[in-house]
Length: 215
Image (cartoon, rainbow, N blue to C red; front, side, top):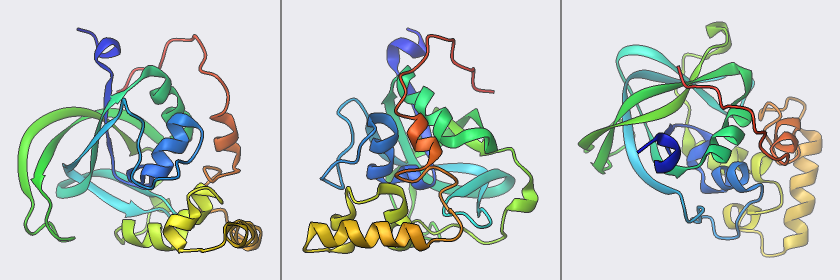
């Protein structure tokens, strides 16, 4: 059976680990339930070895590059359709290249250091590897919890904001998000935020052109 028939599998290690962001990319909107993902998509924890995750300078999102003996914990996502991959390619942009890698599923998830991780089956997945200049990467590790706490609002806009920020009044949530975006001098989303140029491009319909093969 072809990959097209089975659907695509991917490994996500950054902003796309957040259900709201993944749903926005594949569906064009943010769900009300922060745990929601489209029915055809399944998500499980996984780890990618021999890569290291870095913060990208002046950005909210991370990058991975090959580094022997390093590892990156993320999510293994199955059931992605051709149209989903088409949108993901747009979302990631020209800073990344989509590659096929092998990841290990996690049957138990440990702490941030990896202590307590229990690895299971090895599976193949596509992931987005940094191809831009490494001078744009910081030495430090990217923090997903910090992203959810401090940066999520720039990526999901007013939709889904109440779940993360605890706003009791929806109008207040919308106003504060809009104000925060307006005051943000550097766009840490790189155009991937709720009203960025990349997000606007995601609203287009997939073309009939053949998809780029992962390399």
